[in-house]
Length: 273
Length: 306
Ligand SMILES: Cc1cc2nc3c(=O)[nH]c(=O)nc-3n(C[C@H](O)[C@H](O)[C@H](O)COP(=O)(O)OP(=O)(O)OC[C@H]3O[C@@H](n4cnc5c(N)ncnc54)[C@H](O)[C@@H]3O)c2cc1C
Ligand SMILES: Cc1cc2nc3c(=O)[nH]c(=O)nc-3n(C[C@H](O)[C@H](O)[C@H](O)COP(=O)(O)O)c2cc1C
Ligand code: FES
Image (cartoon, rainbow over all chains, first blue to last red; front, side, top):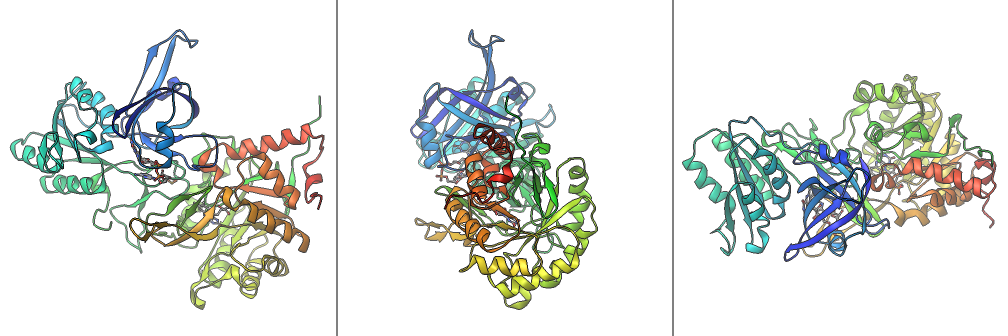
């Protein structure tokens, strides 16, 4: 759905990373973890396109200012990387946004009995928080979070407050182990043979490493991808990734916006990129 | 209260309830937008460019934003005519709005064969031929940049179908009027202009082109002045109805094209920023007519005071 929204709060949670809460109509509560929103920063033509962000959290709070006495909200966690996100970071309470949400397919939460292993790199943690919030209701959840420095590992205490067991790795060792989060993951998996499922979101090299681990150990794994998007609804075909059967003769491109952004790792072709 | 102005226009015998259509490649196959606007309140829908066989399109990145516009190098990815008939047409059949099929080929023969196939589909109101494609068999010369090649391909399509025939012009030419005349001489009953302008974008840090295809087509507000100029020039030179395309974001933009000589318009990139754009533009145009005491949108066509 398409709606106008207002900023409720916009807080810098770590240098260059912001968490924004915005108003949303009640129907947004049907959104599932892994789905995303497209945000139009202002009504002008620069920046032209909407910007996609994963849903970090959503809910409703009591307020005297709406007819029903409740205000539904949506949260995103974003990193300032360019023009659009810099403009977002400048917004204050009461500023206006235009939103398309919820878009895409979310994570399949999987059966209740298995352990859930979340792997996130940098701002890839954003959709994993909403996911963890749902998963902790029925399963044991572990989070493997990676980043360049401790300032790139976000909102870990929020996950811990949900009861998630967290493992952290940073490139420079300023938080958790020094090295790649996928190395920590590999060590953990070597010691734990219970039935489990992986959920990953982050930079492509991290996702590739996670997909390799999942394939080697035959663990079900879902990954959430990013792609340059214009429409967010399957119309422009700008955001495609090659599916498993893709070749020039047998085209099998999938839209990250509509068929994803969450895919089973086995649905995709990992070598060609 | 003012009476409602007449908004309906006629393009090559296709009656549109209002002059606002959705441009090829920016509106999927219609269904993608059904939740965001009333498909029965726009003038017509143009499909993604169809080819005989499914087409994979280009590698990624395929799109990049530029100031006031975007570049795309989708590479004409599409499901092919068979899947269009089987998977996309059943939905379009339920919508009471003309569907115009945009088609392209990589050889003369492919254009002709496609036109014959589409001729046999009763639900298709008309054909829009995209001639901005290379003729693979003849050294890759783009049909739409050479008047003789354009004449040949339009003539063949004309001989292959009795459907209303619209030809979509490429702006990447020295003389748009010569192209327009060649297409009309070959039997085009209406002209759409413009398609995207070829451009490119560079990532300085990586010293690489941003698009995998290196070059792409520029669309959006950045191209509107060029599109307006071309519509205006062509309207002075040919007698067929014109469909103005290029950077139309709102009713004002659309009405400017009508003044410049267009009978109808297509909304492209704007659908990405606002999926209800086409309907809002049609409603905004009607409101402007009411406010300015214009009883019929047809009175505005080419009414530029110049
Ligand atoms: C499904 C999805 C979910 C995402 N979730 C988040 C999130 O939760 N938090 C977060 O910080 N970021 C997220 N991103 C990335 C985010 O969309 C980009 O960082 C953002 O669009 C950059 O905009 P900009 O104007 O600041 O950058 P610029 O570089 O100025 O943007 C130029 C153009 O490139 C596009 N672009 C640039 N980087 C990316 C990228 N990494 N992915 C997709 N498009 C890009 C922009 O959308 C814009 O069209 C997500 C991307 C996708 C596809
Ligand atoms: C992503 C994208 C895909 C397009 N695909 C096609 C196509 O398949 N066939 C075609 O004739 N034009 C295609 N176009 C061109 C548009 O129909 C239109 O002519 C152009 O974008 C200019 O209009 P705009 O500025 O309103 O977008 C495409 C444009 C975009 C942005
Ligand atoms: S962003 Fe347009 S198809 Fe995915």
